[in-house]
Image (cartoon, rainbow, N blue to C red; front, side, top):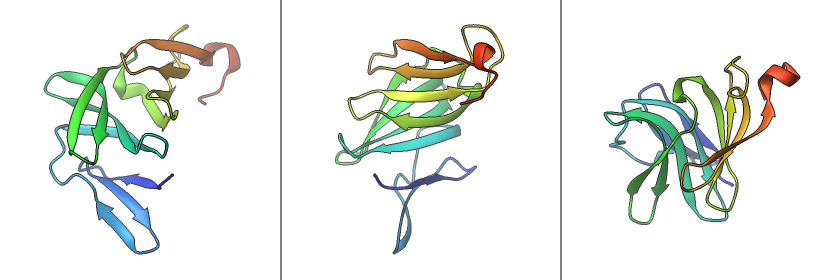
Length: 125
């Protein structure tokens, strides 16, 4: 996949040997925690917060449309986001609350499954 970088300003950049390209100059969110690119679907994903609250954003670069998927966990605790190639994402969460922190898989409807509970492993990832 394409390397993706983010800035505190909320911008998402595609990184290549030619440099960094600002993908979405006017993102709809106010804060951005993490972003990822899915080479299978060609979509970008971001965990971010806008006026409607925390959500996972799905970005279709062909139409530059932003769709929201509700996040089953607090966006503020998400450390990493990785696209899974089939319309969902994996989220790494730093929460120390049982059945909340750890590694999650979230599908395109916002349904989440906790795969690894951080309180059982002691790990953030």
